[in-house]
Amino acid sequence: MSTYSAALEPQATAHGAGTRPSLFRLTAVELRKMVDTRAGFWLLVGIALLTVAVVVGLQFSANHDDSLRGFFSDSSQVALTLLPIVGILLVTSEWTQRTSLITFTLVPQRARVVVAKVAAGVALSVVAWFVILAMAAVGTAVAGGAWSLPGWLIGQSSLYLAVSMLMGIAFGAALLSSAPAIVLYFVVPLGFALLGGIPALDGLATWFDGSQTLEPLVNESMSAAQWAHAGTTMAVWMALPLAVGLWRITRGEIN
Image 1 (spheres, rainbow, N blue to C red):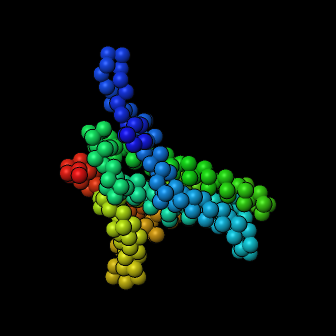
Image 2 (spheres, helix red, strand yellow):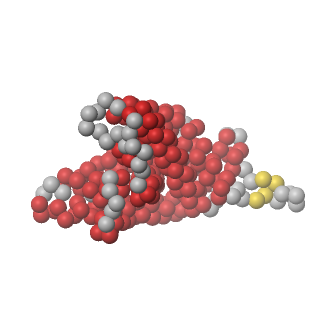
């Protein structure tokens, strides 16, 4: 029996009947899946090492803001870029590694597995936020910078990390294949960014280009108009593909 199937196997009650695993337990299993594969493990290690490299490199930048806010904003870019790939692999590995049959046999309610993956993604983004904050604090201490971290940055940056992870999960769920999901995750938003360079289509980019609508989350306290733009981007690139993925996973044939 595999590690995953053993973790998900219903526990016997005093009356000999089985009980389905709790959502908390399913989330714990999904968190474990993120580090149990070589791709997921080394990707997380790579994110951590690159974040350290960024903090070290910023020490030698003459124009860098040496405050905790500056270090945090700049060092978070690594996780914001690469963490969604972990989310993509969390979903698509069920099909590429052919564990979906085991998973959905042990947990027939497929929507619960999707919810657990979403919860695991949010949990990992929270862990990543604290790791980035710790690294930024070390950088600030070494540089002798100011220990200023605005309240709006705490909330908005944590939201940005969670949204980035959920966008990766959404793309993975919609496509159920690692390579197309990773490519489209980066190419489609880039396409909208390029379209924004065309004056006639600039209006579309202000609503759908994440580089314009989501980047302010770690750079400034956002206005109502900016929140409207960011909300539209989240709906198109996170909520919509996640809904499509949920439909495919719950209705599709597992083999």
